[in-house]
Length: 312
Image (cartoon, rainbow, N blue to C red; front, side, top):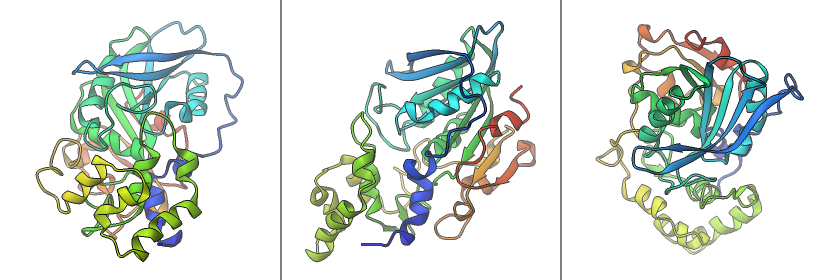
């Protein structure tokens, strides 16, 4: 069983309990805001994503909108929603397809290339939005910003990704070598509800992974050994190199094509890929992006989205 230290990069990249569990910002707490739960956002194929909407109290005019698109259940960003609404922004926390209260099936890293732009353009059409839409988030919610930006939705003003994984570079494998954390994360994001207690039980996972090692079983059997047979896991195992699957929209990202101001927020150990190379948000920058790099502690600052030119 890999030690906690050996899985640190994985945890920094994809673990919501570590990356999304920052202390809630005190500033703005208790301020009056307007709240709407269960807002439905239609996708191009008819599926509807579920969002929680936070707005400044008695909003008088259209405002910039910020949203996070997360597989870790929308309520995790409640504190952020309160913060942004108390500071004059509309904020939505959106469950990705197949998670939380959103419809459809969760297909990690693939679906956001279409769903992200659909959320952006839907938001831009709402009466409370002034047409400028920003994305904010870390971990998977950092990755899906890159996948969304790749689609060039017209009303996406900026992105503020943090500690984004790069599929094919540091997840679900490194140099073609998988790690048991893959099925742990898949279990965490299985079904519609949160599996956080299971995900956080280190002794449980050590014992489950130990079955594979002691039984000299193939890695491809790990999902069955753990007790969560997963088509997602089997798809990943079947594609050990960048190939036709990895090249579908959203899996590969070309930041050099982006023409948006952005601010990247990442932890020191997440500032390079697991093999020591740069992640997508720090490679192939274009001068036209107006990019600003931010080396920060895990989680960064909730005001990051406010400071990027192009939002207001």
